[in-house]
Amino acid sequence: MKKIKSNNIVKFPDKISEAEREIEAVIFASPEPLDVASIEKKISKKTNIDKCLENLKKNYLNRGINLVRISGKWSFRTAENLSSLMSQQKTVEKKLSKAAIETLSIIVYHQPVTRAEIEEIRGVAFGTNTLDILLELNWVKHMGRKDVPGKPIQYGTTDEFLNHFSLQKLSDLPTIDELGSAGLIDTSSVESNIFGTGKFYKEKQSEKKENIYSDIDEMLSGTLKNEE
Image (cartoon, rainbow, N blue to C red; front, side, top):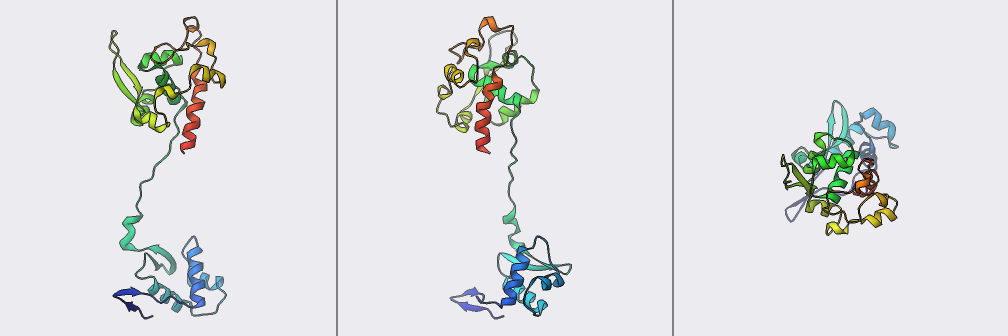
């Protein structure tokens, strides 16, 4: 098949035979390489399959995809000199654990807050990697140390947290009244002013250690699902 040169640009003939078109379509649509016998069964034209395949192979020789034969079977493959373009980074989406979402909720509404305070509010200890996950996501950061014996690290949210959840500022988050109206928390068990108080529960509720954050996580979980 002759190449046609125009203005120093190599072009291939636009027309191929009807048999070649059918063979091209069959190979393209096949999930696996096909041998000559399999191709012959699928096309409607009686033709010299080997000759058609060689013509198609020449047609695709200098294109982004090539028609190649491997172990007697034919398939379309990315041109070898372009294989590097096909490498890509794959992002693996992982859902936050319930503990991570609850921990994030507590930090959001209590910051700055220590690990011990988070565990006291949740009423249960959590794994060492829970905070690490939030730190790696850059949603949580260290906010200095609390001026108490032991100088524990305090945690708070980052600008990346605001950006991810499309918030301008922390006060854009639902208030206690709004969470109560939505049925997410029992407002009788919490203080109305929660930002930076260090205490979400009223004193009379301290023995109950009820985890009201198990409902707040629905709000954050819903946002995370929309991002997937």
